[in-house]
Image (cartoon, rainbow, N blue to C red):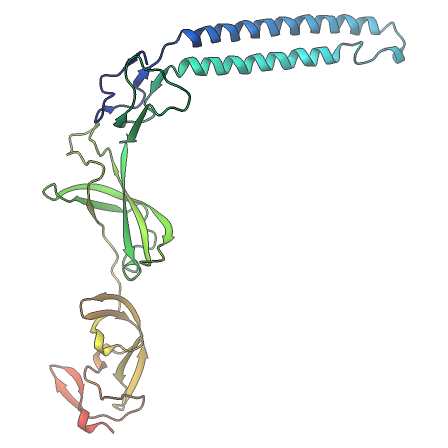
Length: 307
């Protein structure tokens, strides 16, 4: 390595396009000159072969057609010369690229995580010179349980989110939900989403720095569901809730459990919420006659009156 950027140290921040380090160019400059010379030679050979082919074409007009072949017209020689020019052009492009690569530039705004070289070191092909992280944005992967998915927008990608950074006096930064990873984990049955923060190291702003590896909480607005009721879990059996019909008979109603909160379920279904039974006989069945007691405007089955 010949020289390096002063910020090319562990923890340094370098902007997109800045030179990280450079290596000696002598060998690559010589290779470029050689490639340019080979290209010039190939072009000259092509010009010569084309001129000879033109002469052969003019002379062929005075010859019998049976005597005029592709070889006589020098077509193979012209094609070979054209191929040599293309090969020389390819070699020139490679030499130009290699010379440009003598200055290694940051492909994006970067944080230097690790530097493995120093001035005077010899770099071989494939050697790891440094490890850098893209700081133009940061991503946070967060899980959403299946029972919470109903409270998110149908397509949450692009929705605004508030990222609360743990351990930094509840520092909050704005972000967006960037994508759904498209996988439901087999062990937890959770869907993974990715939230993105722009410019986490504040190269282009005065916001507090959000460092990679920080723990964070992602907060975002969901949607309001209609016709959802909270009910104690012990009133739900195999996704069934018991209500009363117009004749005060027990009737089972299928429901969907949307979410579990403590000892309650949030449920949704096609039933009359004002006639949900909160105290059931030991063995309820459809059509069972009951006698009702009023308890704070709720329906309670008198167990002794059940038939």
